[in-house]
Amino acid sequence: MGWLGIEDEAFIRGNVPMTKQEVRILMLAKAHIAPNAVVYDIGAGTGSLSIEAARLAPQGHVFAIERKTEGISLLRANMEKFAVSNITPMQAEAPDGLVGLPAADAVLIGGSGGNLAAILDVVTAKLSLGGRVVVSAITMQSLMQAITYMRAHARTYHYEAFQVQINRLEQVGRYDMAKAINPIYILTGTKGEWV
Image (cartoon, rainbow, N blue to C red):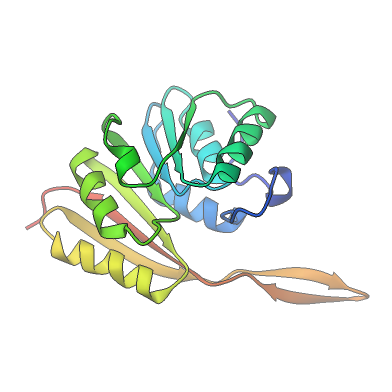
């Protein structure tokens, strides 16, 4: 249904945070989304991750959970712009909004509203064996919450984490200067039976 890594400028945006192109590519690569996958995008914001995940899973479905009204409006506008219909936008607070959803093959968490452990509890019960949860964190505290959870559930998850720092070159007169994007931590947990 298209390439991976839609340019940021292509999305309709407002005052809701959006996962930047380079980070989206890394998160989606780590999620291993199959063409028929069921995906949760928690903290969907403008829907940039949801749109890209839906394009990777044309026979699957994405459940985009976002608590802000503006985010849901932007997500719907972006769904229309990119002609993507296999997304269900859900205005809800996680983890409550996850309760009635079908089992997931991949879960993307870009925002947790301070409820990361509770969200991961619900996600763990719903994630298929071999499924992946991919968490992006801008703060060390959020990263440590995710790591602490994964370590406490070492028999369920194998995890890896890394930090990425993106610098985009910006033309300033006859020079090109690096303009930094905030560093992001990405943690991937794979559900299995680990000893």
